[in-house]
Length: 116
Length: 111
Image (cartoon, rainbow over all chains, first blue to last red; front, side, top):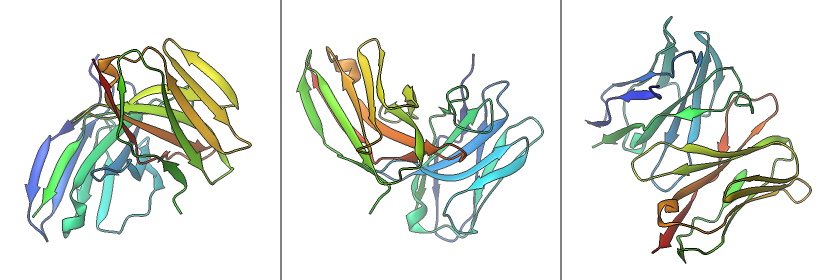
Protein backbone atom coordinates (compact mmCIF):
# COMPACT_ATOMS: atom_id res chain seq x y z
CA UNK A 1 0.00 0.00 0.00
CA UNK A 2 1.22 3.48 -0.81
CA UNK A 3 1.95 5.66 2.18
CA UNK A 4 1.46 9.40 2.43
CA UNK A 5 3.03 11.03 -0.62
CA UNK A 6 4.22 14.61 -0.79
CA UNK A 7 5.44 16.72 -3.67
CA UNK A 8 7.81 18.21 -4.44
CA UNK A 9 10.53 16.66 -2.26
CA UNK A 10 12.73 19.75 -2.40
CA UNK A 11 12.04 23.37 -3.27
CA UNK A 12 14.09 26.55 -3.32
CA UNK A 13 12.27 29.88 -3.30
CA UNK A 14 13.18 33.54 -2.87
CA UNK A 15 11.90 35.80 -0.11
CA UNK A 16 8.51 37.27 -0.95
CA UNK A 17 7.51 34.46 -3.29
CA UNK A 18 4.58 32.10 -2.92
CA UNK A 19 4.76 28.30 -2.58
CA UNK A 20 2.25 25.43 -2.87
CA UNK A 21 2.98 22.05 -1.32
CA UNK A 22 0.90 18.97 -2.10
CA UNK A 23 -0.06 15.87 -0.17
CA UNK A 24 -1.88 12.64 -1.01
CA UNK A 25 -3.09 10.70 2.04
CA UNK A 26 -3.15 6.95 2.48
CA UNK A 27 -6.09 5.46 0.61
CA UNK A 28 -9.18 5.56 2.82
CA UNK A 29 -7.82 8.22 5.17
CA UNK A 30 -10.06 11.26 5.42
CA UNK A 31 -7.95 13.48 7.64
CA UNK A 32 -4.83 15.40 6.61
CA UNK A 33 -2.61 17.41 8.93
CA UNK A 34 0.32 19.69 8.15
CA UNK A 35 3.37 20.19 10.36
CA UNK A 36 6.46 22.39 10.06
CA UNK A 37 9.78 20.97 11.27
CA UNK A 38 12.65 23.40 11.58
CA UNK A 39 16.11 21.81 11.64
CA UNK A 40 16.88 20.44 15.10
CA UNK A 41 13.31 20.85 16.36
CA UNK A 42 10.23 18.68 16.61
CA UNK A 43 7.33 19.14 14.18
CA UNK A 44 4.92 22.01 14.91
CA UNK A 45 1.23 21.74 14.05
CA UNK A 46 -0.03 24.05 11.29
CA UNK A 47 -3.44 22.74 10.13
CA UNK A 48 -5.76 19.78 10.25
CA UNK A 49 -8.50 19.05 7.73
CA UNK A 50 -11.15 16.38 8.00
CA UNK A 51 -13.76 15.74 5.35
CA UNK A 52 -12.67 18.93 3.57
CA UNK A 53 -13.27 21.13 6.61
CA UNK A 54 -10.63 22.86 8.72
CA UNK A 55 -10.69 21.22 12.16
CA UNK A 56 -7.65 22.81 13.75
CA UNK A 57 -5.13 25.57 13.24
CA UNK A 58 -1.81 26.09 14.97
CA UNK A 59 -0.07 29.33 15.88
CA UNK A 60 0.98 30.35 12.38
CA UNK A 61 0.38 33.66 10.57
CA UNK A 62 -2.32 34.16 7.95
CA UNK A 63 0.33 33.79 5.25
CA UNK A 64 -0.21 30.08 5.74
CA UNK A 65 -3.37 28.54 4.28
CA UNK A 66 -4.50 25.09 3.24
CA UNK A 67 -7.36 23.23 1.70
CA UNK A 68 -8.51 19.66 1.22
CA UNK A 69 -10.03 18.39 -2.00
CA UNK A 70 -12.93 15.93 -2.54
CA UNK A 71 -10.41 13.10 -3.07
CA UNK A 72 -8.93 14.01 0.39
CA UNK A 73 -5.64 15.25 -1.03
CA UNK A 74 -4.45 18.56 0.33
CA UNK A 75 -2.45 21.67 -0.49
CA UNK A 76 -0.52 23.93 1.85
CA UNK A 77 0.05 27.46 0.58
CA UNK A 78 2.52 29.96 2.00
CA UNK A 79 2.54 33.57 0.78
CA UNK A 80 5.22 36.26 1.11
CA UNK A 81 7.92 33.77 2.07
CA UNK A 82 10.38 34.70 4.80
CA UNK A 83 13.81 33.23 5.48
CA UNK A 84 12.34 31.73 8.67
CA UNK A 85 9.91 29.64 6.63
CA UNK A 86 12.80 27.39 5.59
CA UNK A 87 11.90 24.01 7.05
CA UNK A 88 10.71 20.47 6.36
CA UNK A 89 6.95 20.53 5.81
CA UNK A 90 5.32 17.27 6.81
CA UNK A 91 1.91 15.99 5.86
CA UNK A 92 0.22 13.29 7.94
CA UNK A 93 -2.99 11.39 7.35
CA UNK A 94 -5.29 9.41 9.62
CA UNK A 95 -8.55 7.52 9.33
CA UNK A 96 -10.46 9.61 11.83
CA UNK A 97 -10.40 13.22 12.88
CA UNK A 98 -8.35 12.80 16.04
CA UNK A 99 -4.89 11.39 16.67
CA UNK A 100 -6.21 8.61 18.86
CA UNK A 101 -5.11 5.06 19.42
CA UNK A 102 -7.41 3.77 16.70
CA UNK A 103 -6.49 6.53 14.30
CA UNK A 104 -2.77 7.28 14.58
CA UNK A 105 -1.03 9.78 12.35
CA UNK A 106 1.02 8.45 9.43
CA UNK A 107 3.58 10.92 8.12
CA UNK A 108 4.98 11.44 4.64
CA UNK A 109 8.67 12.15 4.06
CA UNK A 110 8.06 15.84 3.72
CA UNK A 111 8.93 18.70 1.40
CA UNK A 112 12.17 20.48 2.23
CA UNK A 113 11.67 24.19 1.55
CA UNK A 114 14.64 26.54 1.40
CA UNK A 115 13.97 30.28 1.24
CA UNK A 116 16.90 32.42 0.08
CA UNK B 1 8.96 27.27 28.93
CA UNK B 2 8.10 24.69 26.28
CA UNK B 3 5.12 22.41 26.89
CA UNK B 4 7.27 19.34 26.16
CA UNK B 5 10.96 19.14 27.02
CA UNK B 6 13.27 16.53 25.56
CA UNK B 7 17.03 16.21 25.90
CA UNK B 8 18.38 16.71 22.35
CA UNK B 9 21.47 14.58 22.90
CA UNK B 10 23.27 13.49 20.83
CA UNK B 11 23.37 10.11 22.54
CA UNK B 12 25.90 7.51 21.45
CA UNK B 13 25.82 3.90 22.75
CA UNK B 14 27.49 0.60 21.82
CA UNK B 15 25.47 -2.10 20.10
CA UNK B 16 23.52 -4.21 22.59
CA UNK B 17 23.19 -1.46 25.18
CA UNK B 18 19.91 -0.48 26.84
CA UNK B 19 18.86 3.00 25.79
CA UNK B 20 16.68 5.30 27.87
CA UNK B 21 15.00 8.31 26.25
CA UNK B 22 12.91 10.74 28.27
CA UNK B 23 10.48 13.65 28.02
CA UNK B 24 8.85 15.87 30.59
CA UNK B 25 5.73 17.93 30.04
CA UNK B 26 3.96 20.76 31.80
CA UNK B 27 0.32 20.38 30.72
CA UNK B 28 -1.41 17.86 32.96
CA UNK B 29 -4.30 17.67 30.46
CA UNK B 30 -2.22 15.62 28.01
CA UNK B 31 -3.79 12.16 27.80
CA UNK B 32 -2.22 10.31 24.86
CA UNK B 33 1.52 9.77 24.55
CA UNK B 34 3.50 8.62 21.56
CA UNK B 35 7.05 7.92 20.48
CA UNK B 36 8.08 8.46 16.88
CA UNK B 37 11.33 7.46 15.18
CA UNK B 38 12.67 9.68 12.41
CA UNK B 39 15.48 8.56 10.14
CA UNK B 40 17.50 11.18 8.31
CA UNK B 41 15.57 12.73 5.42
CA UNK B 42 12.43 10.76 6.30
CA UNK B 43 9.14 11.51 8.01
CA UNK B 44 8.42 10.41 11.60
CA UNK B 45 7.29 6.81 12.04
CA UNK B 46 5.03 5.82 14.94
CA UNK B 47 6.74 3.40 17.36
CA UNK B 48 4.63 3.34 20.50
CA UNK B 49 1.28 4.72 21.61
CA UNK B 50 0.10 4.77 25.24
CA UNK B 51 -2.82 6.23 27.10
CA UNK B 52 -2.59 5.41 30.77
CA UNK B 53 0.21 5.54 33.30
CA UNK B 54 2.32 2.41 33.41
CA UNK B 55 4.38 0.37 30.98
CA UNK B 56 3.67 -0.88 27.48
CA UNK B 57 6.01 -3.31 25.77
CA UNK B 58 6.43 -4.09 22.08
CA UNK B 59 9.38 -6.27 21.19
CA UNK B 60 12.59 -4.51 22.19
CA UNK B 61 10.72 -1.29 23.00
CA UNK B 62 9.05 -0.33 26.29
CA UNK B 63 7.13 2.90 26.77
CA UNK B 64 6.59 4.17 30.29
CA UNK B 65 4.22 6.93 31.39
CA UNK B 66 4.12 8.56 34.84
CA UNK B 67 1.31 11.11 34.77
CA UNK B 68 1.84 12.12 38.39
CA UNK B 69 5.39 13.25 37.56
CA UNK B 70 4.52 14.37 34.00
CA UNK B 71 7.33 12.17 32.70
CA UNK B 72 7.46 9.65 29.86
CA UNK B 73 10.25 7.30 28.82
CA UNK B 74 11.15 4.97 25.98
CA UNK B 75 13.51 2.07 26.64
CA UNK B 76 15.25 0.20 23.84
CA UNK B 77 16.75 -3.17 24.75
CA UNK B 78 19.55 -4.84 22.80
CA UNK B 79 20.03 -1.72 20.70
CA UNK B 80 21.07 -2.19 17.06
CA UNK B 81 22.86 0.11 14.59
CA UNK B 82 19.55 0.24 12.69
CA UNK B 83 18.05 2.00 15.73
CA UNK B 84 20.24 5.03 14.96
CA UNK B 85 17.73 7.83 14.37
CA UNK B 86 16.09 10.80 16.05
CA UNK B 87 13.42 9.85 18.57
CA UNK B 88 10.53 12.24 19.10
CA UNK B 89 8.07 12.12 21.95
CA UNK B 90 4.59 13.49 21.21
CA UNK B 91 1.42 13.97 23.15
CA UNK B 92 -2.12 15.18 22.67
CA UNK B 93 -5.12 16.28 24.67
CA UNK B 94 -8.14 14.03 24.72
CA UNK B 95 -10.20 16.28 22.51
CA UNK B 96 -7.51 18.10 20.54
CA UNK B 97 -6.46 16.95 17.15
CA UNK B 98 -2.90 18.22 17.03
CA UNK B 99 0.18 16.57 18.43
CA UNK B 100 2.68 18.49 20.54
CA UNK B 101 6.19 17.19 19.95
CA UNK B 102 9.41 17.31 21.88
CA UNK B 103 12.50 18.55 20.06
CA UNK B 104 13.84 15.02 19.54
CA UNK B 105 16.85 13.05 20.78
CA UNK B 106 19.46 11.99 18.24
CA UNK B 107 20.63 8.42 18.94
CA UNK B 108 23.61 6.66 17.40
CA UNK B 109 24.20 2.95 18.08
CA UNK B 110 27.80 2.02 17.32
CA UNK B 111 28.53 -1.47 15.89
